[in-house]
Image (cartoon, rainbow, N blue to C red; front, side, top):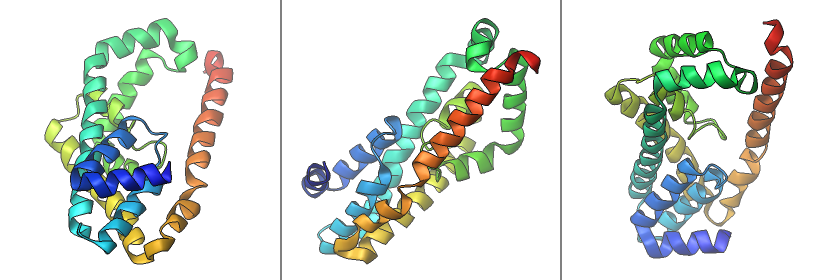
Length: 198
């Protein structure tokens, strides 16, 4: 897979990087910690530039975030409340929880979008509640773009500096995704088991 990603980056250039980062945001199993450092390494060899690959990666991830934001807007607040009322036990949510979440996002939406973009496993789907809550589009794009730019710049710069050893970035970050997913699963199971008592 690594060879195929490298070939796509080299042949596709900036457009290939935008496509990969879009796919990674929409389909989280494609790990950014693998191909973003690779893009930085490719930039170090030329003809791509580091600022160019960072810009392309940021635009691709922002397009993916926009996709999930629009999914959330399509679901909408009323439908989210209906789903919580009908399937609340399995969602571990009540309509009141949806309302509290929307109010919380109104207050904390900017830092959630900014820092959520740098959490493996959550980077893409964090846009869905923002869409459900109808976070102002300008605010969403600004803070999502900043978070994406920071994450993309860190990974691609690391690959650029490490050169042929760019795969070390994936090794360093590999434990992060399972930890985040594990916390989500444990929290879900706990909420499921205690849902009727809350």
